[in-house]
Length: 505
Image (spheres, helix red, strand yellow):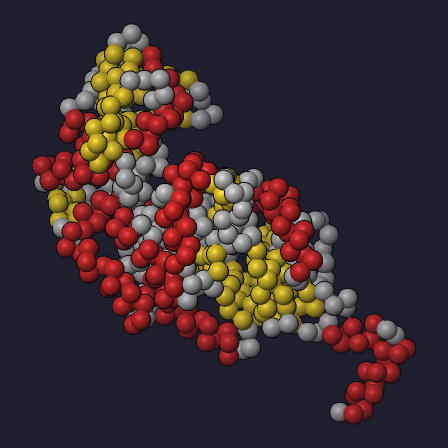
């Protein structure tokens, strides 16, 4: 042993790179477990058959997810990685609330409590964490026992950041810098409109990364900005090693790699790794990184492996986390477990035919005896499975607090709305090709430009699509309108009738 030490010292004296070469063998192991867009899914769920066919490669699609099962899986992986001397961090990339009875009843508090119980380390916010008044967004932040980061949201009055932009943590000898970003769309949500400004993702990232690079060896971005923006960030902002993404609900089973340059390096991967774990916590994202130190003492990502681990029934519920879920579910179980009707088939999307949207539009039009109904894309958040329909199922389909709006619009105005917003409809059949309305009828007759039609829509869509058009807020919740309609019908059939055809050239 002494002889080896003397030999290394002698080599260093003759060749200064000798010890650096020996040090280059130093490595560290880091595992990042990640979730995004869980949207209040604290309990297991299933996809409809049609969605199962469309989500290619999904290893399990029924009775999947659940935060208590996820906790068991996380605990198992932490033990495995720790036994090898590695470090594990669990992160979330936003939109953890808004989407189920839990979110409607507790407005994100149950979701944060579940994350606290699982033991999340870091997270950023999603745009749906701004669904609430600004005070409630701040309240959710105060409840989190994990570190929340966001670099591009500031208080409009004070100019101060809502959250810390970044943090540096140690994975063994390696300094890992994390920072968070949110989509600029968050500024249009209630909390954003009330109190917060959201800066551009690219310019913010350039500023923060330049600072983080002076403090850390590896830089990781928690990005609730969507897959397309993540690719731009990887290309346009040098210095980001890993982007853990959300917002676009992208399923990236093996991650995505964006080359930093065309050069091929022996010692590092020379680019940015992008990962994202689809939605609702049906799978847990796992990114394993082998970090290595080069001859100059610089740490880099030498190898990586990205995968999505299914959260399935063979994972027992973590007892402590299951207790947290029970604490929040028991008080609302009677209300949201109530059966209000039955679905004769699966209400899901088949290209331009989306039975779940048709159901909502038909229900609102029928309940208010209107000539037409309009629904914006994104206003329905989940399919409806065949079988008994509970109030909880309908909350998952429509997790918003929107009310029903009456309006009167000319045929000419309706034509303009159809071209500009391509809404889902009831009482209308239309086809848009490119930017042209090729055909459109109301009640089976061509739309008369000068005639005034009576319609209904939701309060969210009305706010921007019906500008300049006379409206009346009925004060009736869209969700309750749907519940009433299904109760009266008893059994509802999915409708696929080609009423809306949109081709963008």
